[in-house]
Length: 293
Image (cartoon, rainbow, N blue to C red):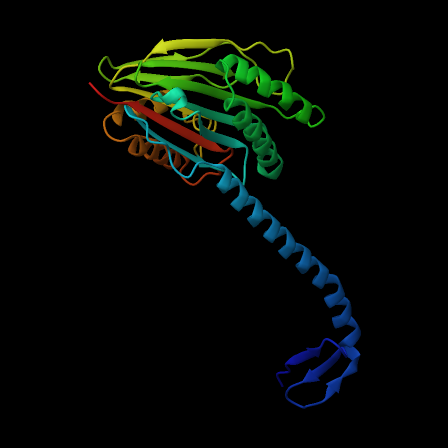
């Protein structure tokens, strides 16, 4: 005969729903199981709530939308390999000095998950504080690095960062590369790519690191793409990497149209290449299109 047991948690009494008989002999084992599983369930739910809070906090740290700067079309996206991660992008010093000027930042903290997310939040705070003060980009990065080194001294973490200032009115771009992979500058009129490199180690490595600011002119029809290495290091089920050649092909094929469409095309291409294999790293892409005559 089928028996359904119901446990009275307070009295630890088993009840047979068919016969109506109380069964004291199973109470001890059921109580032991409850005592063992109950705290584990509570801890599990606490951990889930804490992780969800971390997700919401990190989402609030990323810009809700790109700023509107005359002559520029901008879009950025981040996808984390876990619920939270160490990739970072930001828009700073918007319209500085009343000019059509914008600072952009793309960073990548070593590691994944919650530790990387906490370190990212620290770096963001330092960078936002320093970018609000006068100074060249290399001075800004150097000051941020001084603070950052103190915070990661014992953790061994570091962060790569690409910081750029674009003046769309003057058609000038300045940047500093702190250990980050070079950004790509694509000239659609000439069908030419250029890597925006430069000298400078990752943040957190040494407080004496020297950073060098580079400059170039920008023109209508050019596309600037700043990514984290999770893009080209994505692997397909056979273990092959997406690579920068594929990235440049997607940029070339989507150079015309809004920056959002280009950014989404890059992520779609990476997702299609991955073809169901695990996303091994956080990925971020920022696309800046120079408009105008």
